Length: 145
Length: 81
Image (tube, rainbow over all chains, first blue to last red; front, side, top):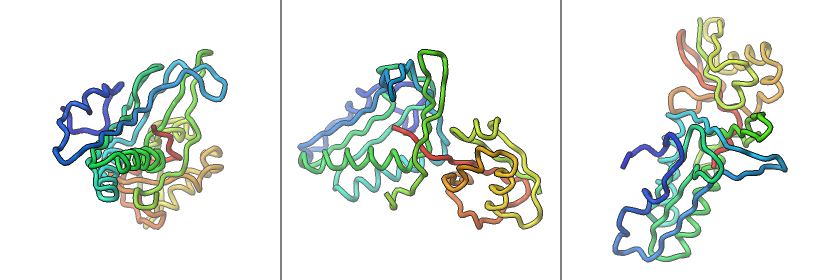
């Protein structure tokens, strides 16, 4: 398995479920984001994900470390770059923890934080042939979020 | 000095290119570079306060002093997930 958290093309969620559960863990939570076929009423055919690779890798690693510290959990985060089609997985977060409460909480925190701190941009492609970058949110640090 | 600006995400559209070269005076800062870009690209000027600048894998302050040949990256508002 690649150690890179930024991957070219759609993610295979099963890859992040293959590693064994630590024996002291009883909760496994997964969040996966996938490409939807509609956005604000427009028919979407795919999304081209762009990234600043060096900073994105660093921020994804920081999210894992911060989530592990905050929630006492083992956290894995990955994001796709490149052309994805409807139904493809663009992001995956897997949390292994002692109990369900911290597993759900860490998963929620990690995806919410990723959306504000990782330099990745969605360029949506539409059924009418147009494409545009989504507006987004000014980047924050992981500690600020 | 001459620096290179990488335009990421929507800033590629605002600047019309993935890479832009800028000639700046001595002891120029990131703020000077953003100011020059804003003069040249009106769409960037409208969103200047929302754009961060990275060097390598660090976000740098607008007061950061640039060096000749340095490469900076525009980080417009992010939309991952």
